Length: 459
Image 1 (cartoon, one colour):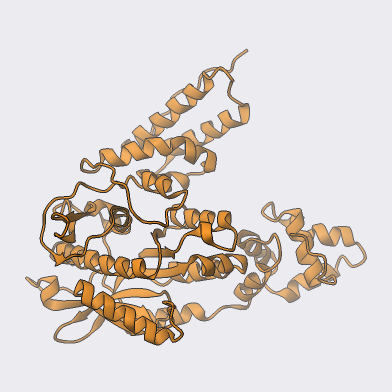
Image 2 (image 1 turned 90 degrees about the vertical axis):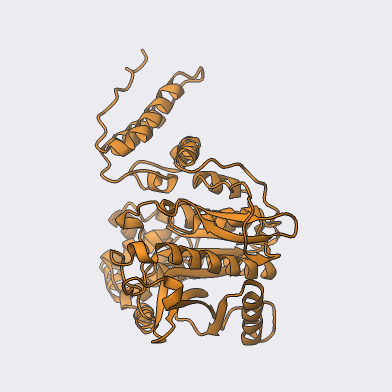
Protein backbone atom coordinates (compact mmCIF):
# COMPACT_ATOMS: atom_id res chain seq x y z
CA UNK A 1 0.00 0.00 0.00
CA UNK A 2 1.43 3.38 -1.02
CA UNK A 3 1.98 5.95 1.74
CA UNK A 4 -0.48 8.87 1.83
CA UNK A 5 0.45 11.97 -0.12
CA UNK A 6 2.20 14.58 2.03
CA UNK A 7 0.12 17.60 3.00
CA UNK A 8 1.12 21.17 2.37
CA UNK A 9 1.97 23.12 5.53
CA UNK A 10 1.52 26.77 6.39
CA UNK A 11 4.66 28.78 5.61
CA UNK A 12 5.74 31.13 8.38
CA UNK A 13 7.35 33.76 6.12
CA UNK A 14 5.64 34.82 2.87
CA UNK A 15 9.09 35.20 1.26
CA UNK A 16 9.64 31.44 1.63
CA UNK A 17 6.38 30.31 0.04
CA UNK A 18 7.97 29.77 -3.39
CA UNK A 19 10.83 27.71 -1.91
CA UNK A 20 8.43 25.60 0.15
CA UNK A 21 6.12 25.05 -2.82
CA UNK A 22 9.02 24.01 -5.07
CA UNK A 23 10.32 21.59 -2.43
CA UNK A 24 6.86 20.08 -1.95
CA UNK A 25 6.29 19.67 -5.69
CA UNK A 26 9.73 18.11 -6.13
CA UNK A 27 8.86 15.58 -3.45
CA UNK A 28 5.55 14.70 -5.13
CA UNK A 29 7.24 14.34 -8.53
CA UNK A 30 9.84 11.96 -7.15
CA UNK A 31 7.16 9.86 -5.47
CA UNK A 32 5.55 9.32 -8.88
CA UNK A 33 8.69 7.98 -10.53
CA UNK A 34 8.28 4.44 -11.95
CA UNK A 35 11.36 3.27 -10.05
CA UNK A 36 9.77 4.34 -6.77
CA UNK A 37 11.01 6.59 -4.01
CA UNK A 38 13.02 5.24 -1.10
CA UNK A 39 11.50 5.79 2.31
CA UNK A 40 14.55 7.44 3.86
CA UNK A 41 14.69 9.97 0.98
CA UNK A 42 11.02 10.76 1.51
CA UNK A 43 11.72 11.38 5.20
CA UNK A 44 14.61 13.67 4.24
CA UNK A 45 12.30 15.71 2.01
CA UNK A 46 9.68 15.84 4.75
CA UNK A 47 12.08 17.07 7.42
CA UNK A 48 13.57 19.75 5.15
CA UNK A 49 10.09 20.87 4.04
CA UNK A 50 8.87 21.27 7.65
CA UNK A 51 11.95 23.31 8.56
CA UNK A 52 11.63 25.51 5.47
CA UNK A 53 8.01 26.24 6.38
CA UNK A 54 9.02 27.06 9.95
CA UNK A 55 12.07 29.18 9.01
CA UNK A 56 12.20 32.66 10.54
CA UNK A 57 14.69 34.05 7.98
CA UNK A 58 14.15 34.49 4.21
CA UNK A 59 15.65 31.76 2.01
CA UNK A 60 16.76 33.49 -1.19
CA UNK A 61 19.89 31.58 -2.21
CA UNK A 62 21.16 28.02 -2.29
CA UNK A 63 23.64 28.97 0.42
CA UNK A 64 20.81 30.05 2.74
CA UNK A 65 18.86 26.90 1.82
CA UNK A 66 21.88 24.74 2.74
CA UNK A 67 21.76 26.10 6.31
CA UNK A 68 18.27 24.73 6.92
CA UNK A 69 18.28 21.74 9.26
CA UNK A 70 17.82 18.51 7.35
CA UNK A 71 19.23 19.88 4.07
CA UNK A 72 22.26 17.97 2.82
CA UNK A 73 24.24 17.71 -0.43
CA UNK A 74 21.62 15.50 -2.09
CA UNK A 75 18.78 17.98 -1.47
CA UNK A 76 21.02 20.86 -2.56
CA UNK A 77 21.53 19.13 -5.91
CA UNK A 78 17.79 18.53 -6.22
CA UNK A 79 16.94 22.21 -5.64
CA UNK A 80 19.81 23.74 -7.56
CA UNK A 81 17.68 24.36 -10.65
CA UNK A 82 15.00 26.19 -8.67
CA UNK A 83 17.45 28.64 -7.12
CA UNK A 84 19.07 29.35 -10.49
CA UNK A 85 15.68 30.35 -11.94
CA UNK A 86 14.65 32.09 -8.72
CA UNK A 87 17.83 34.22 -8.67
CA UNK A 88 17.48 35.16 -12.32
CA UNK A 89 13.87 36.23 -11.77
CA UNK A 90 15.08 38.75 -9.18
CA UNK A 91 17.75 40.22 -11.49
CA UNK A 92 17.75 42.18 -14.75
CA UNK A 93 17.51 40.04 -17.90
CA UNK A 94 20.87 38.51 -18.64
CA UNK A 95 22.41 36.26 -21.20
CA UNK A 96 25.13 33.69 -20.76
CA UNK A 97 28.55 34.64 -22.09
CA UNK A 98 31.26 32.01 -22.23
CA UNK A 99 34.43 32.93 -20.34
CA UNK A 100 37.93 32.64 -21.78
CA UNK A 101 39.72 31.75 -18.57
CA UNK A 102 41.84 28.62 -18.95
CA UNK A 103 41.50 27.66 -15.29
CA UNK A 104 37.92 26.45 -15.47
CA UNK A 105 36.98 24.19 -12.59
CA UNK A 106 34.53 21.36 -13.02
CA UNK A 107 32.28 22.92 -10.44
CA UNK A 108 32.48 26.47 -11.82
CA UNK A 109 29.27 26.48 -13.85
CA UNK A 110 27.48 24.84 -10.93
CA UNK A 111 28.63 27.58 -8.59
CA UNK A 112 27.64 30.33 -11.05
CA UNK A 113 24.19 28.86 -11.47
CA UNK A 114 23.97 28.49 -7.68
CA UNK A 115 24.43 32.24 -7.25
CA UNK A 116 22.29 33.13 -10.23
CA UNK A 117 25.13 35.14 -11.75
CA UNK A 118 25.26 35.37 -15.53
CA UNK A 119 27.19 38.15 -17.23
CA UNK A 120 25.20 41.01 -18.74
CA UNK A 121 25.23 42.00 -22.35
CA UNK A 122 28.04 44.44 -23.14
CA UNK A 123 27.24 48.03 -24.04
CA UNK A 124 29.33 51.11 -24.67
CA UNK A 125 30.80 53.15 -21.83
CA UNK A 126 33.88 55.15 -21.00
CA UNK A 127 36.77 54.00 -18.81
CA UNK A 128 40.41 53.02 -18.84
CA UNK A 129 41.49 52.24 -22.43
CA UNK A 130 42.29 48.67 -23.35
CA UNK A 131 41.26 47.09 -20.04
CA UNK A 132 38.62 44.54 -20.90
CA UNK A 133 37.91 41.84 -18.33
CA UNK A 134 36.86 38.30 -19.29
CA UNK A 135 33.14 37.69 -18.93
CA UNK A 136 33.69 34.99 -16.34
CA UNK A 137 35.84 37.34 -14.24
CA UNK A 138 33.08 39.95 -14.45
CA UNK A 139 30.63 37.36 -13.15
CA UNK A 140 32.90 36.35 -10.28
CA UNK A 141 33.50 39.94 -9.16
CA UNK A 142 29.77 40.61 -9.30
CA UNK A 143 29.32 37.74 -6.86
CA UNK A 144 31.69 39.29 -4.33
CA UNK A 145 29.61 42.45 -3.85
CA UNK A 146 26.29 42.67 -2.01
CA UNK A 147 23.47 41.13 -4.05
CA UNK A 148 20.88 43.69 -3.02
CA UNK A 149 22.93 46.42 -4.70
CA UNK A 150 22.41 44.88 -8.12
CA UNK A 151 25.19 43.31 -10.14
CA UNK A 152 28.29 44.88 -11.59
CA UNK A 153 28.24 44.97 -15.37
CA UNK A 154 31.30 45.01 -17.57
CA UNK A 155 30.75 47.51 -20.34
CA UNK A 156 33.01 47.83 -23.35
CA UNK A 157 33.04 49.51 -26.77
CA UNK A 158 34.28 47.56 -29.75
CA UNK A 159 37.47 45.52 -29.97
CA UNK A 160 39.71 48.32 -28.71
CA UNK A 161 37.08 50.13 -26.70
CA UNK A 162 37.14 50.96 -23.02
CA UNK A 163 35.78 48.94 -20.14
CA UNK A 164 34.78 49.50 -16.56
CA UNK A 165 32.54 48.01 -13.91
CA UNK A 166 29.30 49.93 -13.42
CA UNK A 167 26.56 49.44 -10.86
CA UNK A 168 23.07 48.48 -11.91
CA UNK A 169 20.02 49.33 -9.84
CA UNK A 170 21.89 52.10 -8.02
CA UNK A 171 18.72 53.42 -6.42
CA UNK A 172 17.81 50.06 -4.92
CA UNK A 173 16.89 50.48 -1.26
CA UNK A 174 19.32 48.68 1.04
CA UNK A 175 18.22 46.38 3.84
CA UNK A 176 20.12 46.62 7.12
CA UNK A 177 21.80 43.22 6.91
CA UNK A 178 23.30 44.01 3.49
CA UNK A 179 24.92 47.36 4.32
CA UNK A 180 28.70 47.19 4.40
CA UNK A 181 30.69 49.31 6.82
CA UNK A 182 31.35 52.88 5.67
CA UNK A 183 34.04 55.44 6.56
CA UNK A 184 32.85 58.47 8.59
CA UNK A 185 30.68 60.80 6.52
CA UNK A 186 30.21 64.56 6.73
CA UNK A 187 27.06 66.21 5.35
CA UNK A 188 27.00 66.81 1.59
CA UNK A 189 30.38 65.11 1.22
CA UNK A 190 31.04 62.86 -1.79
CA UNK A 191 33.10 59.72 -1.19
CA UNK A 192 35.92 60.43 -3.65
CA UNK A 193 36.10 64.07 -2.51
CA UNK A 194 36.84 62.93 1.03
CA UNK A 195 38.70 59.64 0.56
CA UNK A 196 41.25 57.90 -1.63
CA UNK A 197 40.87 54.11 -1.95
CA UNK A 198 44.16 52.21 -1.70
CA UNK A 199 44.73 48.51 -2.35
CA UNK A 200 47.15 47.08 0.24
CA UNK A 201 49.05 43.90 -0.73
CA UNK A 202 50.90 41.80 1.82
CA UNK A 203 54.68 41.99 1.34
CA UNK A 204 55.03 38.22 1.85
CA UNK A 205 53.01 37.38 -1.25
CA UNK A 206 54.75 35.11 -3.76
CA UNK A 207 54.44 36.34 -7.34
CA UNK A 208 57.10 34.12 -8.91
CA UNK A 209 60.23 36.07 -7.99
CA UNK A 210 63.02 35.07 -5.62
CA UNK A 211 62.49 38.23 -3.61
CA UNK A 212 58.88 38.41 -2.47
CA UNK A 213 59.06 42.09 -1.53
CA UNK A 214 60.47 43.02 -4.94
CA UNK A 215 57.83 40.91 -6.71
CA UNK A 216 54.98 42.41 -4.67
CA UNK A 217 56.15 45.95 -5.41
CA UNK A 218 56.40 45.12 -9.12
CA UNK A 219 52.84 43.76 -9.08
CA UNK A 220 51.68 46.88 -7.23
CA UNK A 221 53.31 49.10 -9.87
CA UNK A 222 51.68 47.09 -12.68
CA UNK A 223 48.19 47.37 -11.15
CA UNK A 224 48.69 51.07 -10.47
CA UNK A 225 49.77 51.84 -14.04
CA UNK A 226 47.20 49.62 -15.78
CA UNK A 227 44.15 50.61 -13.73
CA UNK A 228 45.06 54.06 -12.43
CA UNK A 229 44.43 53.05 -8.80
CA UNK A 230 46.60 53.46 -5.70
CA UNK A 231 48.43 50.34 -4.50
CA UNK A 232 50.79 49.88 -1.57
CA UNK A 233 52.80 46.95 -0.19
CA UNK A 234 53.11 46.36 3.55
CA UNK A 235 52.95 43.58 6.13
CA UNK A 236 49.31 42.65 6.81
CA UNK A 237 48.23 40.97 10.06
CA UNK A 238 45.77 38.71 8.21
CA UNK A 239 44.87 38.07 4.57
CA UNK A 240 46.82 38.86 1.42
CA UNK A 241 44.97 41.98 0.30
CA UNK A 242 42.71 44.63 1.81
CA UNK A 243 41.38 48.04 0.76
CA UNK A 244 41.61 51.21 2.85
CA UNK A 245 39.92 54.57 2.50
CA UNK A 246 42.47 57.27 3.33
CA UNK A 247 41.04 60.66 4.25
CA UNK A 248 42.53 63.24 1.91
CA UNK A 249 42.91 65.95 4.59
CA UNK A 250 43.28 64.09 7.90
CA UNK A 251 45.15 61.09 6.37
CA UNK A 252 43.25 58.74 8.69
CA UNK A 253 43.04 55.23 7.20
CA UNK A 254 39.81 53.21 7.44
CA UNK A 255 39.72 49.54 6.43
CA UNK A 256 36.91 48.84 3.95
CA UNK A 257 34.72 45.77 4.33
CA UNK A 258 36.66 43.54 1.88
CA UNK A 259 39.59 41.16 2.39
CA UNK A 260 41.30 38.67 0.06
CA UNK A 261 43.10 35.43 0.85
CA UNK A 262 45.10 34.31 -2.20
CA UNK A 263 46.10 30.69 -2.73
CA UNK A 264 47.76 29.02 -5.68
CA UNK A 265 46.59 25.45 -6.14
CA UNK A 266 49.87 23.91 -4.91
CA UNK A 267 49.79 25.88 -1.66
CA UNK A 268 46.08 25.18 -1.24
CA UNK A 269 46.69 21.45 -1.62
CA UNK A 270 49.44 21.43 1.01
CA UNK A 271 47.44 23.60 3.41
CA UNK A 272 44.50 21.17 3.11
CA UNK A 273 46.76 18.25 3.99
CA UNK A 274 48.17 19.91 7.13
CA UNK A 275 44.91 21.70 8.05
CA UNK A 276 46.46 25.18 7.82
CA UNK A 277 43.71 26.42 5.54
CA UNK A 278 41.03 25.87 8.19
CA UNK A 279 42.94 27.98 10.69
CA UNK A 280 43.55 30.68 8.06
CA UNK A 281 39.87 30.82 7.10
CA UNK A 282 38.90 30.99 10.77
CA UNK A 283 41.12 34.05 11.24
CA UNK A 284 39.55 35.73 8.21
CA UNK A 285 36.05 34.99 9.48
CA UNK A 286 36.89 36.63 12.80
CA UNK A 287 38.87 39.63 11.53
CA UNK A 288 35.81 41.92 11.58
CA UNK A 289 35.43 42.44 7.81
CA UNK A 290 32.27 41.20 6.12
CA UNK A 291 33.15 40.42 2.48
CA UNK A 292 35.62 37.53 2.48
CA UNK A 293 37.19 36.71 -0.90
CA UNK A 294 39.11 33.47 -1.50
CA UNK A 295 41.21 33.87 -4.65
CA UNK A 296 42.38 30.52 -6.05
CA UNK A 297 45.16 30.79 -8.63
CA UNK A 298 45.89 28.08 -11.18
CA UNK A 299 44.23 24.95 -12.51
CA UNK A 300 43.67 22.21 -9.89
CA UNK A 301 43.80 19.58 -12.64
CA UNK A 302 47.52 20.32 -13.05
CA UNK A 303 48.24 20.11 -9.31
CA UNK A 304 50.41 17.34 -7.89
CA UNK A 305 48.06 17.06 -4.92
CA UNK A 306 44.57 15.69 -4.70
CA UNK A 307 42.48 17.34 -7.41
CA UNK A 308 39.23 16.22 -5.79
CA UNK A 309 40.15 17.64 -2.37
CA UNK A 310 41.08 21.02 -3.87
CA UNK A 311 37.84 21.30 -5.83
CA UNK A 312 35.78 20.17 -2.83
CA UNK A 313 37.54 22.66 -0.54
CA UNK A 314 36.82 25.52 -2.95
CA UNK A 315 33.18 24.52 -3.34
CA UNK A 316 32.51 24.15 0.40
CA UNK A 317 34.43 27.37 1.15
CA UNK A 318 32.01 29.26 -1.09
CA UNK A 319 28.76 27.43 -0.48
CA UNK A 320 28.92 26.70 3.24
CA UNK A 321 31.45 29.08 4.82
CA UNK A 322 30.40 32.46 3.46
CA UNK A 323 33.38 33.20 1.21
CA UNK A 324 33.25 34.43 -2.37
CA UNK A 325 35.65 32.26 -4.38
CA UNK A 326 37.36 33.85 -7.40
CA UNK A 327 39.45 31.81 -9.84
CA UNK A 328 42.41 33.02 -11.88
CA UNK A 329 44.76 31.24 -14.28
CA UNK A 330 48.05 32.71 -13.05
CA UNK A 331 50.00 35.74 -11.80
CA UNK A 332 48.95 38.04 -14.65
CA UNK A 333 45.29 37.10 -14.31
CA UNK A 334 45.51 37.69 -10.55
CA UNK A 335 46.88 41.20 -11.13
CA UNK A 336 43.95 42.00 -13.41
CA UNK A 337 41.52 40.63 -10.86
CA UNK A 338 42.96 42.88 -8.14
CA UNK A 339 42.63 45.84 -10.49
CA UNK A 340 39.01 45.13 -11.42
CA UNK A 341 38.10 44.44 -7.80
CA UNK A 342 39.57 47.79 -6.79
CA UNK A 343 37.56 49.61 -9.45
CA UNK A 344 34.39 47.80 -8.39
CA UNK A 345 34.93 48.61 -4.71
CA UNK A 346 35.51 52.29 -5.53
CA UNK A 347 32.27 52.28 -7.53
CA UNK A 348 30.36 50.57 -4.72
CA UNK A 349 31.41 53.09 -2.06
CA UNK A 350 31.01 56.06 -4.39
CA UNK A 351 27.44 54.96 -5.13
CA UNK A 352 26.31 54.21 -1.59
CA UNK A 353 28.37 56.57 0.56
CA UNK A 354 25.86 59.42 0.76
CA UNK A 355 22.71 57.30 0.95
CA UNK A 356 23.62 54.76 3.64
CA UNK A 357 26.64 56.12 5.54
CA UNK A 358 24.52 57.33 8.46
CA UNK A 359 22.88 53.94 9.03
CA UNK A 360 25.94 51.77 8.27
CA UNK A 361 28.60 50.51 10.64
CA UNK A 362 31.75 52.62 10.77
CA UNK A 363 34.83 51.08 9.21
CA UNK A 364 37.61 50.37 11.72
CA UNK A 365 40.77 52.40 11.45
CA UNK A 366 43.80 50.46 10.29
CA UNK A 367 45.23 50.49 13.82
CA UNK A 368 41.97 49.07 15.21
CA UNK A 369 41.93 46.39 12.51
CA UNK A 370 45.54 45.47 13.22
CA UNK A 371 44.90 45.28 16.98
CA UNK A 372 41.87 43.06 16.49
CA UNK A 373 43.87 40.71 14.25
CA UNK A 374 46.69 40.48 16.79
CA UNK A 375 44.21 39.27 19.38
CA UNK A 376 43.19 36.47 16.98
CA UNK A 377 46.76 35.17 17.05
CA UNK A 378 46.59 34.66 20.80
CA UNK A 379 45.33 31.11 21.25
CA UNK A 380 44.10 29.50 24.42
CA UNK A 381 45.45 26.14 25.56
CA UNK A 382 42.25 24.48 24.33
CA UNK A 383 42.55 26.06 20.88
CA UNK A 384 46.14 24.90 20.60
CA UNK A 385 45.13 21.40 21.71
CA UNK A 386 42.37 21.34 19.07
CA UNK A 387 44.85 22.31 16.35
CA UNK A 388 47.17 19.53 17.49
CA UNK A 389 44.34 17.00 17.40
CA UNK A 390 43.49 18.03 13.83
CA UNK A 391 46.88 16.64 12.73
CA UNK A 392 45.72 13.15 13.74
CA UNK A 393 44.31 11.00 10.88
CA UNK A 394 40.48 10.99 10.70
CA UNK A 395 40.23 13.93 13.13
CA UNK A 396 38.33 16.75 11.44
CA UNK A 397 37.72 20.21 12.89
CA UNK A 398 34.32 19.10 14.23
CA UNK A 399 35.85 16.06 15.90
CA UNK A 400 38.63 18.14 17.49
CA UNK A 401 36.13 20.67 18.86
CA UNK A 402 33.99 17.85 20.24
CA UNK A 403 37.01 16.40 22.06
CA UNK A 404 38.09 19.70 23.66
CA UNK A 405 34.52 20.28 24.80
CA UNK A 406 34.93 17.29 27.13
CA UNK A 407 38.69 17.49 27.65
CA UNK A 408 40.01 21.06 27.16
CA UNK A 409 43.67 20.07 27.66
CA UNK A 410 45.83 17.09 26.83
CA UNK A 411 46.38 16.57 30.59
CA UNK A 412 42.65 16.20 31.26
CA UNK A 413 42.37 13.69 28.41
CA UNK A 414 45.36 11.71 29.69
CA UNK A 415 43.80 11.55 33.17
CA UNK A 416 40.59 10.17 31.67
CA UNK A 417 42.56 7.44 29.89
CA UNK A 418 44.38 6.63 33.13
CA UNK A 419 41.05 5.91 34.81
CA UNK A 420 40.55 3.08 32.31
CA UNK A 421 44.09 1.72 32.57
CA UNK A 422 44.21 -1.97 31.63
CA UNK A 423 41.09 -1.94 29.45
CA UNK A 424 42.46 -0.99 26.03
CA UNK A 425 39.15 -1.58 24.27
CA UNK A 426 37.37 0.89 26.57
CA UNK A 427 40.18 3.40 26.19
CA UNK A 428 39.99 3.23 22.38
CA UNK A 429 36.20 3.70 22.42
CA UNK A 430 36.08 6.31 25.21
CA UNK A 431 35.81 9.38 22.96
CA UNK A 432 33.46 7.66 20.51
CA UNK A 433 31.07 6.93 23.39
CA UNK A 434 31.21 10.58 24.50
CA UNK A 435 29.92 12.10 21.27
CA UNK A 436 28.24 10.96 18.07
CA UNK A 437 30.49 13.36 16.16
CA UNK A 438 33.59 11.31 17.03
CA UNK A 439 33.86 8.15 14.94
CA UNK A 440 35.60 4.94 16.01
CA UNK A 441 38.71 5.54 13.88
CA UNK A 442 39.30 9.04 15.25
CA UNK A 443 38.70 7.84 18.82
CA UNK A 444 41.20 5.02 18.39
CA UNK A 445 43.86 7.22 16.73
CA UNK A 446 43.65 9.89 19.44
CA UNK A 447 44.07 7.23 22.13
CA UNK A 448 47.12 5.76 20.39
CA UNK A 449 48.70 9.18 20.07
CA UNK A 450 48.01 10.41 23.61
CA UNK A 451 48.21 7.22 25.66
CA UNK A 452 49.59 4.54 23.37
CA UNK A 453 52.80 4.31 21.39
CA UNK A 454 51.63 6.74 18.67
CA UNK A 455 52.30 4.21 15.94
CA UNK A 456 50.03 2.56 13.37
CA UNK A 457 47.54 5.41 13.20
CA UNK A 458 44.83 4.48 10.71
CA UNK A 459 44.04 6.95 7.94
